[in-house]
Length: 138
Image (cartoon, rainbow, N blue to C red; front, side, top):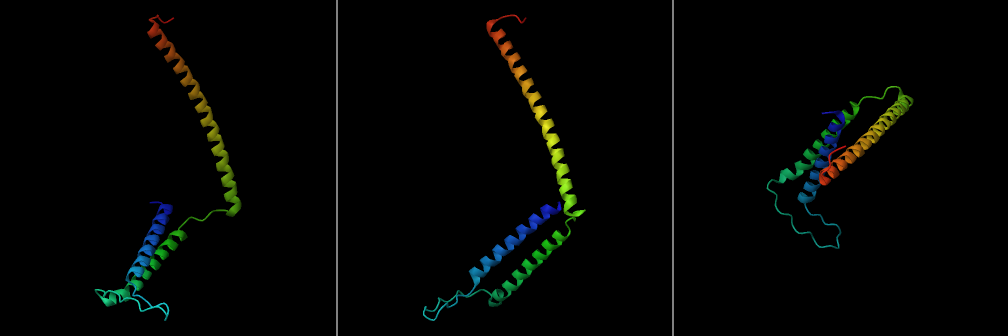
């Protein structure tokens, strides 16, 4: 797998971990009284394991940090541009010129193919007319 695909996969992993972390914390967090004027919140359902909730944020945050570090390592592994910005602009200009040349060649081939298609359509039309009129070809 190339480096860009690995980066994309790592971003997806980080997003999934963040989504699951926030969802779990939202689901399992005990209710909190926001203001003294509001009534007490309803009691939270008793968790299966009370220590489990206190450990979840630590485990999830460590998984997020680990995924972020892996992402940073992948970014650091990206190849550096040789020659700086000037060399990159020169290479871009070369690639654009090559692209233009290939585009012109493709356009010429397309025009030739369209001409050939017209000829084939005319010949087919003549053949169909000859068959319908029961004429012998010239």
